[in-house]
Image 1 (spheres, rainbow, N blue to C red):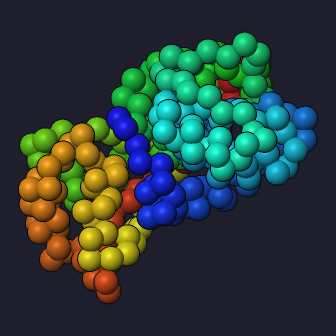
Image 2: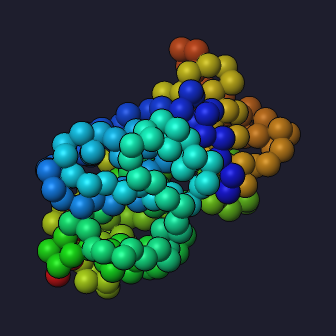
Length: 233
């Protein structure tokens, strides 16, 4: 999938802004090695780095990595596939915000993350969870969505199969407001272009959802998020 990194930062900054308190759950400290998996345009990578650890940002999108390098030229970023990446030296922690629901090969991602961690290393993540943007999925049916939105039990089982002990897991609602008359169409172009590649397909979904989601000059999307903290044996 190709990303418009400039548009992502201009119109969808809430993605990484909502992830700022996930960094607090990570609790990074100086001299650690931390991997930010699915780093996007680098804002949370930089926030982690502010605490003093060595941080590497990885993302499958060359456009996002190019933008991250422009935004934060002193930090390290590279292009890699979450389902198959390898690192030369293990990390103390892997962090991931709003990225792993794009990785349908969740088993491959869990295996790659487990390989990347030192024994006792922690994995702190947030992703779309079961029921996330269900209104969009229903309105676009029968076209399948490009995402993987697991339940707590489903994702915990995947991690456990790859040697993780799940210490914390929560699925919760986070209704997310997207501003503007064109807000939903813009969201669909950014996040569902493979599902709805034409203006006509997007317009059909927009008009289907207008009576229930459009209010006060914008669109209230039915986000549901899954947060997990797990430790590798």
